[in-house]
Image (cartoon, rainbow, N blue to C red):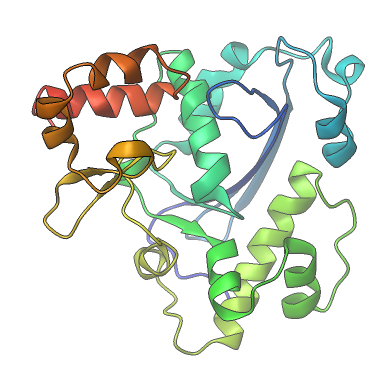
Length: 253
């Protein structure tokens, strides 16, 4: 089933040096931009992460240090990528937990705020897990009756994710072919920061989602534990998490 679009949507996938948003870096980004008129545009960037790629990461995506030695650094392509993403809805596979937080963090290091929160984000993995609970390769086999050749290559995973979402719409009549509805269906928790350190409760209050203060409102924690804000700012948290803590402290979130 073709997607009903009111604005362009970007399907994207990242390969990185690891999964720690605060410490690791992107080594490859591929995206497919689908326009309401059906036009499709593909782009792939190999990125020099300016750090060694661990062997365990290379074992997954097969990208080695020498493969990216002469590639641009993220700051060299950040503005071009941001221009492509602006004004678009976003989709990916496990993107709400990994790809979007990682991309936002890299952009913040370049002083670019994509402000993805203003757009609908569809995580195709969540649809799959709610309906069937399997991996992307299994999802591709299950929904599209194809074997995923080149799994863990960014463009192969991106194209497979796009096809899987269309097949999911064909298979499940209760899934509405509307990006905002799909975004709502694939949102498991209303996170404040992309790492999910803080979430919204039913009263729209910002609540701590980890550690000894889990379940308390962040405003309450700041009032009872004066050192907590400084600990967040000094800690190995993402720039996005630190920014959200600051906005709450200033009463702007």
